[in-house]
Image (cartoon, rainbow, N blue to C red; front, side, top):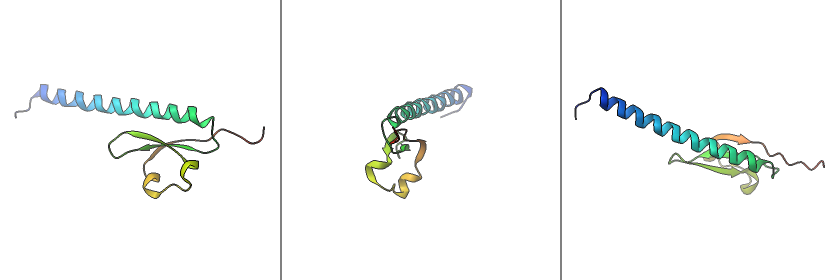
Amino acid sequence: MTYNITTYAAQNTLAADAIIARSITLDEKIQQAERRSFHTFFDIHVIENEDGTYSLFEEGDYGAIPNHLIDSITYTADGKMSDEF
């Protein structure tokens, strides 16, 4: 395969599209975590999976967070429920 400016432009466009798609997916999970955090005492973590997708993880669901998940946390929304009212 020969490379020319068109080939590099196409590769850069595909890479940029992939970055934008991952960013949108991360933003959606952050919004879900923030919405969910109003209804829990526990922190909600956005975890990056090995395949590049994101999942929500609530601390209260599983007790102590395993180390392999701690390394994958990309965002944390603090639990906003309170017992004071």
